[in-house]
Image (tube, rainbow, N blue to C red; front, side):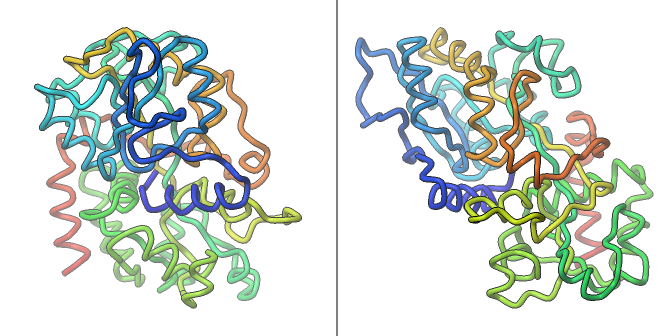
Amino acid sequence: MNTSLRRAVVATAVAALGLPALAACGGSGDKGGEASGGKTVTLVSHDSFVASDSVLQEFTKQTGYKVKVVKGGDAGQAVNQAILSKSHPQGDVFFGVDNTLLSRALDNGIFTPYEAKGLDRVAKEFQADAARHRVTPVDTGEICVNYDRAYFADHKLDPPKTFDDLIKPEYKNLLVTENAATSSPGLAFQLATAAKYGDNGWKDYWTKLKANGVEVVDGWEQAYNERFSGSAGGKKAKGDKPLVVSYASSPPAEVVGAKPLPKEGPTGVATGTCFRQTEFAGLLKGAKNTEGGKALVDFMLSRTFQEDMPLQMYVKPVSQDAKLPEVFTRYGAQVTDPQTLAPEKIAKNRDQWVKEWSSLVLK
């Protein structure tokens, strides 16, 4: 999930539910020192990693290892830093590389293969490196168009459901999306159209989408909190776009902490416009604490950790044993057929597609 959204929804959850959050470079009560016996395992991640103290304490109880967290900016920055420091890794485990960036990390050889315990409970569709086990899937989610229910009810207009709907005249000038060159959800939405319409067909689609008045802004926060009419931020900013590229988990985030919970959330998801993102963890090559790193990767597939993630990072668990909290099942979208692309195909085409998209859409 995009760093800005995670910060926003995590802050909401912490304020509303009293959920404990990690400090920037520590967890499980870490004050920068070693755990008893010097048994510390260091997790390197993006700024949006959050886990409850009680869960990390449970890991320490089970294994004797205390978790130290080193954060390195958004996902792209963190991956790039891990590549640059691969000869002297910052920690033992890296978490947060997703399928849009995975091939870059694998091609640079930053991970040591390790087959984690619990993979037998993870669907094959999430195991992007199943042959070599250089990374382990940990969470998943979808980038989708969200819509403002009130707008469409007031205008007696059905919300769009598919990519094809978005280029219809009745939805002209209603959609705001993020720049594919500067934003993770913007890139994911562009990749979704490439998966849907093919290597060349996506350009024709974006020509039509541009003609239908799509607005492009730099990032998610501007799109969702300023331009979208359906978010809390959007209402304050008087956004006038009832359609926005965001996340399937955005509707639950809108109602977390509400008392009483509404019968229906203020936003919905066009489930035919989604692209699946999966995040992975891997044992860093050259790790000082290999055994602790393996134990942590195993723990990230445990039911304890998997069931903690939804209300911490607003992502879905990959383990089939884990259950989603009620706010997700009640208000979240059920995306049954998201668009996907193989990491190798993304790596081969990403830079060229973004260049072509920028020339086509931003000129």
